[in-house]
Length: 493
Image (tube, rainbow, N blue to C red; front, side):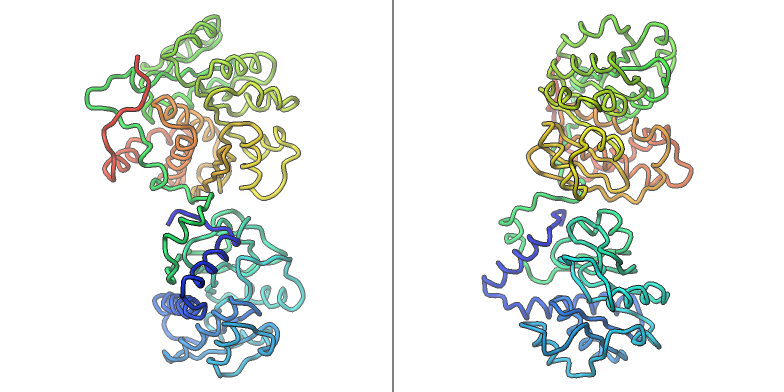
């Protein structure tokens, strides 16, 4: 279930399912039942406060309250608004509840040992204020375990933004598919553990809707991996050119480790002759060439992927190298200094893009390249990809990969250890290494970001950038064992 549904797509999935003959009340019963099951699987019977809002999320709450009561749980239910104002399936399930309905004030939490948040769903369209904000603040301060239904109240389901104030949940149960807001920050931090439950919406309904946002997971790019053929050789695994600087030489050295560990057959560092010996001494398998050979090497079709930016320096020389690389139609990964060198004239960069190109900005670099693009992270990355014609890797703890055609993927690794110098340089090299082997740019960026996140998560505390490439063999072996096929799509010497 890698598809992520926007709130509008989820409404459409509900509508199509109901139109097919499944009553809306059946969906609400199923939703309430799966939340109840999640609760009883994680907690023993205890006094529970069910907080209901005026919409279908509140209707789910009435179902949950009734089912918990039937299992012997002591339940108190509070409703924002009046029962008389409820409509449709929510009104029907309020009638079935038949028990006391209280005002949802902080007093409702007295004596409770569990809170079930059914106040507002993922489609919240305004900031929370007034009594609802006071109640949410009380829940957050009470120190009680909280189960959120659909999404923690106050989190925007599309963007992950907090609308004024939001519940901090220990467990979130959502239905059919997760939403972008479950994985984008800060919403992801509010969700706790996420459970995605089936409530009877068919997979073909989701397929017909055609979601454009996915969770970045091997299932979405596994078939695009270019595993080497049994009779293959190094030239068939691609040749990466990495442009090295003269000052911050460690940056591109980290990139080269990432590119080689992810599978690139050959790699040459191009740099000023004064520092070539340093690059040559870094690793026996790295080749070197002086910058005077740069244009000639671009004419050689065997050099099929280029990484520029880490430690290159900012200025005209880097701009010149980037423009020539892009005009060669080679697969290019542009990071760090290669991006900032065009901060004052980003249109020149975009105009030069002719082949597969991946830009890997963090938020600061993004704002300098695309100062007029605003909105949530997914829409900003998509707009930037469309404008530039490149795949965008908008980095962060919730990295978004966006293609020019509108597709987007959210990476959700829990890897704060990656916030260390050189981590992004390794990622740029990994992307280049996958491109060199023949992987398409969207999948190459997605796979590299996933591997990068998994490496950080599995290594854990103490990680430094040099550790990331050393984690790749184990991760790649796991991918191969879980469905790898020996086949070749890369360049032929």
